[in-house]
Amino acid sequence: MGLRLLACLFHLPTAVIYGSLSLFVSILHNVFLLYYVDTFVSVYKIDKLSFWIGETVFLIWNSLNDPLFGWLSDRVFLSTQQPGTEISSPEVVLKRLRALSHNGPLFAISFLAFWVAWTHPGLQFLLCLCLYDSFLTMVDLHHNALLADLAVSAKDRTSLNFYCALFSAIGSLSVFMSYAVWNKEDFFSFRIFCVVLALCSIIGFTLSTQLLRQRFEADGKAKWDQESTLKELYIEKLSVPQEKRITLAEYLQQLSRHRNFLWFVSMNLVQVFHCHFNSNFFPLFLEHLLSDQISVSTGSFLLGVSYIAPHLNNLYFLSLCRRCGVYAVVRGLFFLKLALSVAMLLAGPDQVYLLCVFIASNRVFTEGTCKLLNLVVTDLVDEDLVLNRRKQAASALLFGMVALVTKPGQTFAPLIGTWLLCAYTGYDIFQRDPLSNVVSAQPKLESDAAWEPTLRQGCFYLLVFVPITCALLQLLSWSQFSLHGKRLQMVKAQRQSLTQGRAPEVKMI
Picture (cartoon, rainbow, N blue to C red):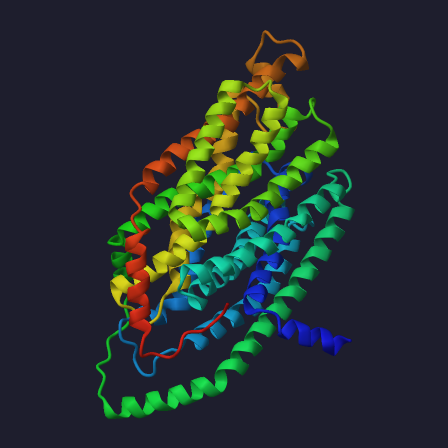
């Protein structure tokens, strides 16, 4: 029975196994995003200064580790002419799979460090965030890089992304289950739940990466040995000039001339900010805008839907991408975000059902957009390879450089959100009795009920004006992005022509 199961796993399509890696990330990361701030503020009672210091250090490390790890991984691919033997595509893929097999389990272990108080809250907050993000970065970089390394055509990449979206949706079910065990007063059940999730992730990473490594080693060994022999015979006859590898300063100079890269990261910085703003403040909006209007089960349903629906919706968006292109779909989602936010502003905070739909849909469409942007980065990888005539696409490094510019949005989201809320209403989430500030800021109000309209109105304006501002900034940046239509087709054709005469392409789908 066990051997039969292993045989079935080995014969799964490679795209399915690739997509399953998203499952083992999402079951942990969704829980992290939803509960890490609340855990340190409400359970561990972290003070405001330690929180801001931790988030500031995390902002710096979170931005720097992506290009750092990408550079360490892909710097060998940057020169136009590699010294010695050319690096083949299967070797690149196997290198990325080895990195995933090591960093995936370590990522799961670092996730567990959040849920047990083992030192001063401020120090634990800082160490846990930096450790967790380091392993998450390694996993994300190599997983996303495989999307660009395994396929060139938009159709194949869309298919790979389809399975990622499907398995991410399944992984989001952990949010539903976490709501049942989350209890600030009794943390034991939630800790056991997190241990179970981490074990599932460790087993999944180990099994999936092993299956993919065996597949590439088995399928490519004979073919690539023959190819290498022919290459060596050819190289012996020709004296090929060797160029020195490109330095980091030279690579950054190349990126600074990459116009589409600059417009994309400008747009994506706002997108990352908005995604994490929704994640961080979703429970707050539910509590102060809807808690007295809806039942606990309805709140749980909205919370779960907001995490699962983006992945399911993305399956539909990907089918649209096949027909209309990623550029048009992303632009349409920006217009939709703007229209829904303006409609909600005009309707006001008293339309309960409309408010429920808007809170959920705002997160669904924002997260759905984030899931599509990896396809745009893979197109930028192609354009970077063509513009600079690289020997091998430096996909992990380019993903890292995108993160260098955009990841600060992840830290700005809770900082700017809490500052805006405090500035407008006087509500400070770091106070042991945060409502006292609201009362003191409003000396004429004598009861707890008196401050509620001000806080509710502040949450509502925060809910609608943030997406309106984000949508306008993104439409401005996206209108300048030219890597679509005929331009994109030309880049794809040039990349394929550059790879002709080299080792055969890796066929994934």
